Image (cartoon, rainbow, N blue to C red):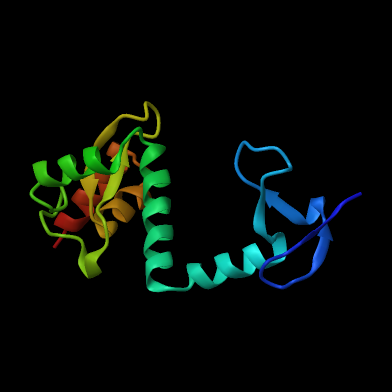
Length: 140
């Protein structure tokens, strides 16, 4: 079995200690061994640029579960003037508005602030419970 030398740590390791370039065969190994590659990735992830990249990727993946892209989400935000559909206030602390959807059909209803979204979730998305809660709040 052939040993390969890491350009970062200088260690010699077997092929299994290397990442290959995506879609390439073993002759196209990364210049650094897996350990050095992971160490470099961890350092990058802790930089402001790395954290922003992770946040963006997480947001993209989150929106994907609703069939949205960042662009289509932004169109929804713009259509609602950047405010919650229920309370008509912007989300606090620069957070994104939540995508509210029907848990039965999966259909998107609109964008809500965290408080309104949690309120609906707390009432189990049940319209009858919401009506009972309204009657309760109307009591003097």
